[in-house]
Amino acid sequence: MSQRIYLSPPHLGDDEFRLVQEVFASNWIAPLGPQVDAFEREVCELTGARAACALSSGTAAIHLALRLLGVGANDSVLCASLTFAATANPILYQGAQPVFIDSEETSWNIDPALVGAALADTKKSGRPAKAVIAVDLLGQCADYDALNAVCAAHGVPLIQDAAEALGATYKGQAAGRQGRAGIFSFNGNKIITTSGGGMLVSDDVELVASARFLATQARDPAPHYQHSTFGYNYRLSNVLAAIGRGQLRVLADRVAARRANEAFYRKALGGIPGVSFMPEAPWGGSNRWLTHIQIDPGAAGTTREAVLEALAAENIEARPLWKPLHMQPVFAGCRAHVNGTAERLFSRGLSLPSGSALTEAELERVASLVRLAIPSATRQ
Ligand SMILES: *Cc1c(COP(=O)(O)O)cnc(C)c1O
Image: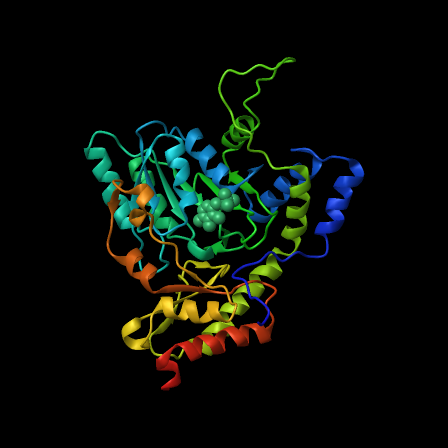
């Protein structure tokens, strides 16, 4: 069996181990500490955000943002449908109800026109939505000028789930900065990792301070343990923050490598009838976290599933696109504004191995197996 090729494995640089050794030498093996403070500072420098709070996961960051923006029991929250369940699960943690919104064709992200219709709809029902969550799918920013305009018109805050998009840009600005609050994930499969972790960023310094308070069990300033509200244990450990600091130093290289992967696949597979690539919207630079192709069964002569299986048989990990959340059993019964885009993209979509440490030979191996699995390629 040939060496396994993973979808998106961790890729450590030269500094992470040394930084972790510093943590061991100082015996600061606790949540919080100087590495966490430095990691937050460095994410602010990188993104231009005024404040950042390092957390145990991206999911925790979304949860805190929802609670701090006033989302509570039975409130409606508009949420992109074409995303990972972690985007919407925190809506349920708050006892609120997701309203799923389909994608537009330019970036495959939440459709601002449908957001406008859904906000008007919830207003008419007498319970206006309390927040909107946009997602930067596979590292590409949503249409934020349009989203911010429609959210401002309705006075609803926008949360940006940029879990997949660290290092991407929107109109020259760092991804994560386009809403009231932005969130990043440092899970093991993301563009950089702390093995597990997340970050909340915002220009609203007080919101971030409140997030830090809630994430640390909501301890009031008092000499004894005093609590006037309930909190969470959501902070990042000092050990993991050290890994994150090392990873930030190589982020630009990781983005360049992932974009080069996409360019390689595009060159190798772009001409095959029935195969198309995820478009890059004119408003930004995707970090191309995952290279993603669509396989049109009519023109290609095969399905996404068959190509996935052909790769799996050769010990290569590929993945379908996220199954839209409005199709997930756990969210059955939730309202949705659907235009068919997410369902179509899901039925045809395949993400190819996209790690930043892939060699040219590995990329070649994947591309040639994809070609072999697609009848229209061999007919060419
Ligand atoms: C990974 C991911 C998350 C969750 O991040 P964790 O750090 O794993 O909790 C949320 N949203 C999207 C879109 C993601 O890809």
